[in-house]
Length: 97
Image 1 (tube, rainbow, N blue to C red):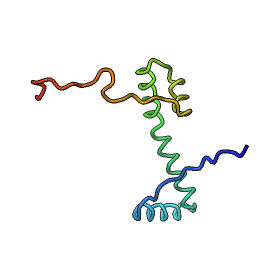
Image 2: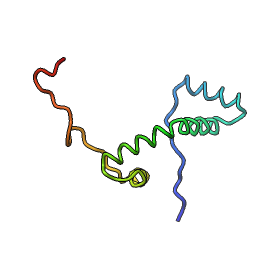
Image 3: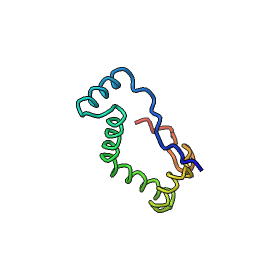
């Protein structure tokens, strides 16, 4: 069976950011594709702790482990909660201030 194509398709960056990426790639001696990949990986490394904290929060909210939540997200089986479902904010007269 052919291997699934794991490449990302990213919409156009817009004129300004495309130009900035072109210059950044040239300065770093890389192609735009390689520089974009490098920048995305760097940003994900920067956000790694925050992402894991958010997954931990979501797992606790659902009563499952971090690993279970992580796997559900990766397998595209994680369920999002529906706003207004369960406990939520409800307006009551006098809550204005």
